[in-house]
Length: 362
Ligand SMILES: Cc1ncc(C[n+]2csc(CCOP(=O)(O)OP(=O)(O)O)c2C)c(N)n1
Ligand SMILES: [Mg+2]
Image (cartoon, rainbow, N blue to C red):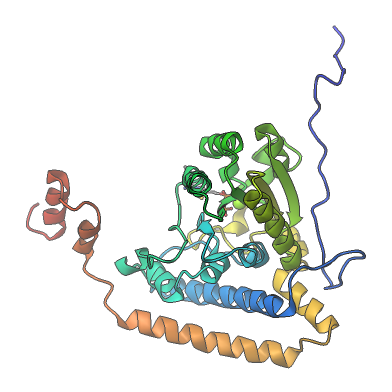
């Protein structure tokens, strides 16, 4: 039997070049029009530099045994910061996975609480009521139905806002992702699914995640737009997210953004990427560093210098030292405190566990 090649048998789409405005050397590409004013570019740069230094500090503390396991986002700063810059803190919701430090900070998640969360202080799990950020989601893709619900709710109430749900390339293989996309498409929820394709799901590479040429192509299966962007280009990420937001507000429903980026460090502090990552690939991505790219772009406009970079770094380091000094001088609470934050009324089983924890039951 011959293979039917008629157009009704739709072929898989071919990969498209991700949208990019600024190249690796910091040069604006011909015809590219950045939509970010200078003051916002500086804001984005500061956010990215701060987040990288914050992760470096946490990494050092973790290695000293003073801080728990965490997922560094080094290398992915532009994807996170660029998207957050396109949002409105008062109207939009951020629904993170666990690698969105710059976006959380920009949207008003207090840095003091993030430090406490990483140090294991129970109070780090709280958020001020007016901050439109949900807590971290470790269970992959479980945040996505919530993001759709938030967006659909805003639409039903006639509120002018969108929700943006971050997820990884690995999380895009979960059932929750597909169910969320389907429902969001059907009800035209103003939600942005933002895939941070950092090429890895722990040690599973992107190629093992899906046969589609690019993850953005999946949107077509749910009846909405998908777009690929250079995730290490702050200006491009901002631009596509701004577009996605505008589409949502205009009643066009969801958008799927795939930001091509790279996880430069370990999956978490408990991982050893040396066992599965090719150093040559990491070195190639290092040349596409998102922070250097913005700095080079600004330097090309005579708006940035090495001295300025040094001054900012010192300033940021001092700020981070103060945050951790203060947080580490506080009590992180007693181990049994965890039982205070589950149910209003402890169950018999929790009560038994608590007594065991206190050493009064063997
Ligand atoms: C439902 C579920 N299955 C498995 C895991 C274990 N796990 C934690 S992170 C991770 C990889 C996630 O990869 P990706 O979504 O690409 O995000 P990244 O860590 O690369 O940012 C896995 C499999 C989990 N947390 N939740
Ligand atoms: Mg990943």
